[in-house]
Image (tube, rainbow, N blue to C red; front, side):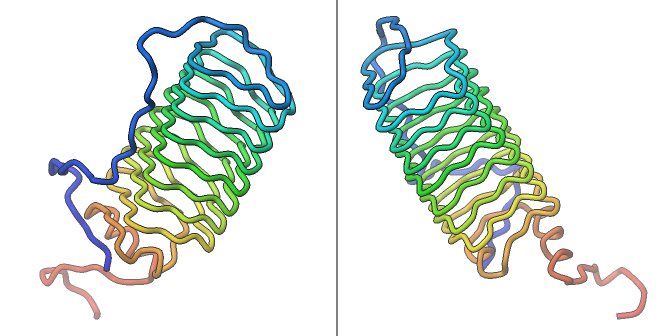
Length: 230
């Protein structure tokens, strides 16, 4: 069953709202030198350029990242735990089997990012660019995205458990063969977004989206007052 609710109605807090990062108030500034097996704990990093690097089993825990360039980076078994990233460029990267836990990204760029076999728990995205991002065989659990650009995003054979998209642009997105549970799209643009009838079961949408989805499924929505042939 599809649940349709007005986007203007105040929503009750969700039991599945993602948990924010648990980061100490005071962090030491440190130099960001990424290599295989590097581990970064309770530190903050800013104004660094690590474009195009390749590394395995890198750990960031209780870390703040600000104004960092990691575009084109290739990570295998990357771990982000309790991380807050602001104005970080992750675009065109390739992350294989990463694990993200309690991560918040604000104003970050993830365009063209490739995720493969990722596990992502408690992720908050605000005003981020994710156009053309691709996720294969990835688990998303408790995701909240607000005012993000996700045009042409591809979620391929993913499991998406309680993911909320508020005021986002999902136009021409594709949820190919993905399992969606408790998804909420209210207030987001979904023109051309590819969803199957099964994926729509249990989804929460707003009235305008309900009309758009009905039209996409070939249904005619008319009031009794409208004239014309049946």
